[in-house]
Length: 205
Image (cartoon, rainbow, N blue to C red; front, side, top):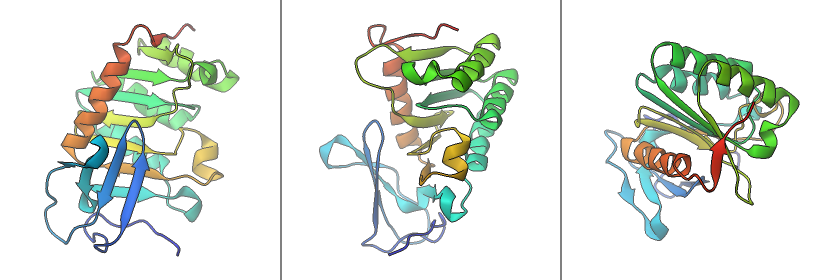
């Protein structure tokens, strides 16, 4: 079966489920048309949200994800948290810089090994020069999240790294979750990581 992006207003069939793995599992269960209920706890400690709150995009199917990511970043007015494994896309970096200039409190966490790559290092140094705080993992694993949270209201996730390859070449999915409960859960996990001085440290340019 070939899947295409579902509009938030159309909903999914009652049997359809999309399961996205990020810091925790978020179950996407379909509902009927109309206003979506608030997020509810799901088995296993995840959070269940109605499909009306979700948009998802497959870049190789022609459903461009990077402009949707920039829209979320541009919507931020107070806080913007970004946890991203691989980050080399200039347009996304420019959107983050715009957020900083309009007074948004920006925080970035990225992967330690990826941050040493030639192109990612140049981009991170540029953001750091703009006084945007950046941290990297110092634990034994990798920082593999692909998450952005704007104002604790909207969160993005999926397999989509912030790179040209993700947008133009790779098989990827990019998911936008417009549910405050979910966004606040993502933000809380980001803050837990940010405050963990044992497993995360300041990026050194």
